[in-house]
Length: 377
Image (cartoon, rainbow, N blue to C red):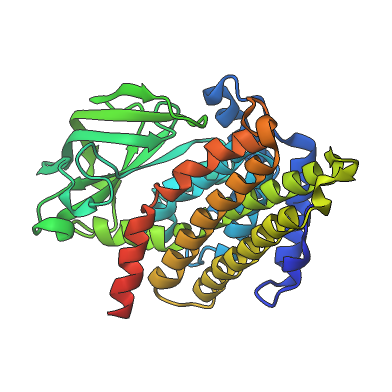
């Protein structure tokens, strides 16, 4: 059913509508992919998205800025067709976000590869003892002659085990807490890096726990300047956090489409299920939450694209509301499917598993509430 009327909203320009139409056509012919081998599927998706030209939107040329509305439209469209395709695209952007925003010409050679689908990137921030509390990161970066030696552990790293390079954050010690972190570009084949564990979660994603044992990185691997890693990480999240809301939005739209199809084809006492006013009420609530989420997501994206230095509050609102609302929409769609809703292989069952992680990664929902409250106080 695919309601595309939101593209007429004043947030968008002609180029956005053209991008959305081109991606919709591509996705209809290429998605979903086979998820039986997640690593192979992700590698294939990165290759194909790069060949089709869509990954060029995951980064920006030197001196230019990322178009957040394009990022959101791509993530919304891909997630409506296949959540793994959205994951593959998003990680090319998030993984190289620091390089896109702050990278040197040498580091940007890697960005060229990731934008063409010739290399897979990863964003290595989370640790076993510090998820949302980034300031308590314990991975250490010691300054040595000609470079840095890194030791520590990262976990729940998306693309861990299949990435060609990682942007990794470590404590370089310029100051306590958040002011003593630095960001580094680390190739996957560097000596001392171990994929300690592959992590299996409820929806298929390549995830891993990494161990770093005296990993040497040259000075040229430092992104930005020493001690600015936290600022870099927050700048990247400021761009990509609203895109998580867009991915949730795409899943919610698909859930509503599935619910509409189900309730109009399923009959009860000789009438379509959709003829019941209680069912209509659920459908109305789902549509309301979707439009409210879309307005918040594209307000945040538009505001950033207009040149706002920071959109922490707007992005936090977008991610918080869109992910929580999508969970509710998908749950309602599953309920309207009755017993078939929990049957393995049904789209709503797949969406039910896909949506849950979005309320956690890139800042859990309660963290977004803290960000919003602090902006008010």
